[in-house]
Image 1 (cartoon, one colour):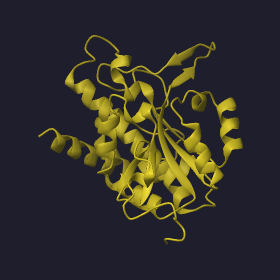
Image 2 (image 1 turned 45 degrees about the vertical axis):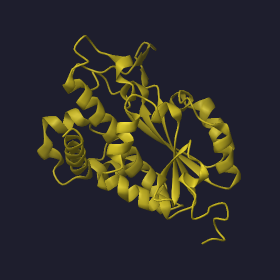
Image 3 (image 1 turned 120 degrees about the vertical axis):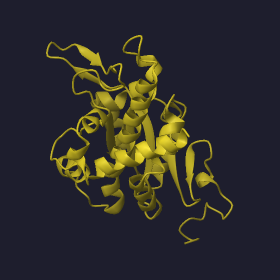
Image 4 (image 1 turned 90 degrees about the vertical axis):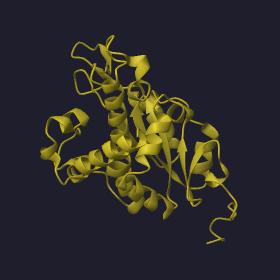
Length: 255
């Protein structure tokens, strides 16, 4: 193994990149942009998600492969209305998406620098991602690695910038935004990035990935509000179990 990783030592921390990575038992690295890690909910989302069963499975697979690096970042969630008007994600006083099917998260796979540059030009969503470090990305690409980007809406990670109304500072609002953000991050990692870590030749199938997570072959995923309205609908699904764990972790953290 030493021959495969000559740049690491038994004493290294976070892949010798402590500013840009989070240490996973000293074996691999997971990169967080400053926009993600230092967002209002960044530290809480990272801490809570790392304790869930799905994220632990994801981290085990990350350690066991050398094909991809993982970058977590935020993006500006918008949709184009029928008249071409661009609308941004808004949160309700309860901490859920107020209306419309705004994306809460995305996973993008980029295999090389050319793909990255093309995606920046062609994807409005990916172009809205800020805080990416060109040096770190070039380091991955030059070593033959691809990058899997885990994106969570900036409007959710920084809820004080996205207050729906004067009641949005209440405890219920803060709790639900945290639940939504954490679940979204875990979902993007486990449902959409994990298959690539397990199989280099994997061909993405979003509907099947969603079916494995919440039990329905849909392009979009249910959110925390859907779960709260009918927990029994998601009984024994990865989504339902993940929400049970997230709620338990948050409750224990607040004791």
